[in-house]
Picture 1 (spheres, rainbow, N blue to C red):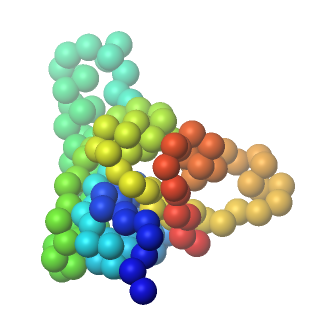
Picture 2: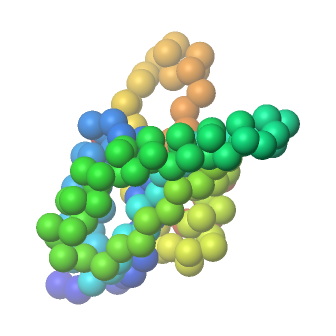
Amino acid sequence: MTPKTKFKRILLPVDGSSYSMDAAIQAVELARLSGGSIVLLHCHRPVPTALGEPNFQQVTEHYAREAATLLAPFRELLDRSGLSYDDKIVGGPTAEVICEVADLEKCDCIVMGTKGKTGLESLLVGSVTHKVMQLATLPVLVVR
């Protein structure tokens, strides 16, 4: 049976956690099944422009090195999968950036991991996944 919905471009936002790796494994499988590609995204805190030079440049370079290290295992997984993928490193408010990149990259869905907090903990701690689900205009697959 052929799926009715084709996810040709899948956004995979990652934070380096095991939850993100679980989501990456599912995103790879979904992309394989639908003949799609993946946009790998890491979002870091925005760099304050008030830092001035050379501090601004140093912080920017630090974030780039940190992101490259964080993305390495995900790139390795995607390289092994043989799937086509792009990667992006963007600074800004995480949930908003995820939704903006999904729109700009013309993604068909977002696949992301979550810790699966419940009850009072989920009310007290802001959840990026929850905010993405509120803001996104496309399907969001949450992997626990």
